[in-house]
Image 1 (tube, rainbow, N blue to C red):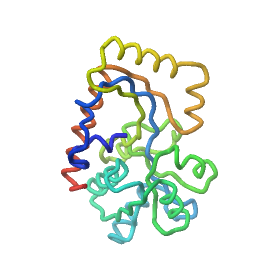
Image 2: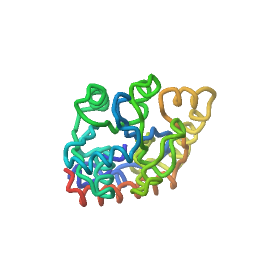
Image 3: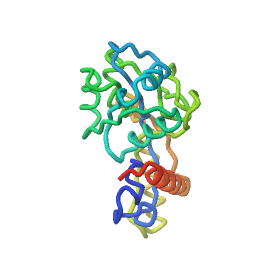
Image 4: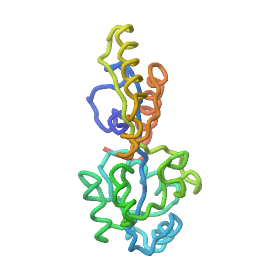
Length: 226
């Protein structure tokens, strides 16, 4: 998960670039901003207009603080120039329940955590913090489409090995992972849980880790997130 990558958030924590060898990025689940279906908010525009008219009164809850959800929300606040209150929760379910109960205005969480309530019609997704629309929510616009930051706030899953693992072993492990991910039924099983395969390995995954570390370190500094 990218939130562990920033040394600003976790000073003294292990460094993901030097402590591990990249194997494969396997799958991700997109983040979603959603409101209760009982809410008068139907679009991101509605949400931001309400936030503009009532500074600080509009809120969103999500896992945190110092999570990718927290950072995505701070970027939206910055880009939209609105005062929205972030309410941290120890996980997505309590944030979702608070939204359904009307305690907070919206929840931002992984699609995999909100999938059941979205499909049941209890939650209404209004935006996806990503560069492109989520496969599972093709009618829900991205924040980038709405003119805001194109941060891809997906929570991703991958494999790494200990630093200095022999190259031959890394190659063999990566092949095992690739074969497993491509095996019959795995993609469907992951999709049923709200996760979507995007397999890439080795140096490409290593470059991705470096980019993530840089980006989230900068965001943590900008928003003074600890």
